[in-house]
Length: 102
Length: 171
Image (cartoon, rainbow over the protein chains, first blue to last red):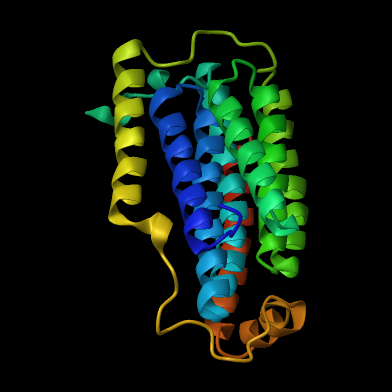
């Protein structure tokens, strides 16, 4: 119990990832869905850092930097899309955007 | 318990509670602020893993830049007050809960909690503080991983242009 190992961090990462996934599945506000995706990305980052430290390889840490950069790009484009969607429909409820559902 | 263990349990508990508040809070502004706390906790967890540089980047880029962007958009769209009932119905909530608990249960049953680095563990003499230092990450980034680094820079440029084009009011 007092010894914190790799398993503790990986379990925490799995729990945070699952919380993010539940958020994506249950919320209809596009911005909160987006924030849930950020939680999932951060959970993956935690796993990357944990394994990089555990096996002594820098690749995982470089990967985390790239994930953070991609998350920044994704946030910029995604929020621009949300702003454009809001301009068209006056709402960010994802159920209002079903034009491409077919 | 050692200091690291206490720090881990406190940070892990706060991170799980605040991320649960993010996905259950009615008010998007409150969600954004809870998410900032989650990101600070993850930065603290990076420190317990001796990754001081990544902890600093986490605070600067995630808690600083990305969350300010989120808060800005929430305020811009005037979503401060919940305008509709935006949580899915009970069947979806129940299915998501079952899937989530099942996923974590499957991972724990598969033994992620007992994972210990085996033969591929750190070579003797690798100092974790040196491994996570700014110098070590920089030398890896500019030598072995220079191509992904350049592609990331290009991606940021494309994303910037894309965001400007998308958010522009067409006439």
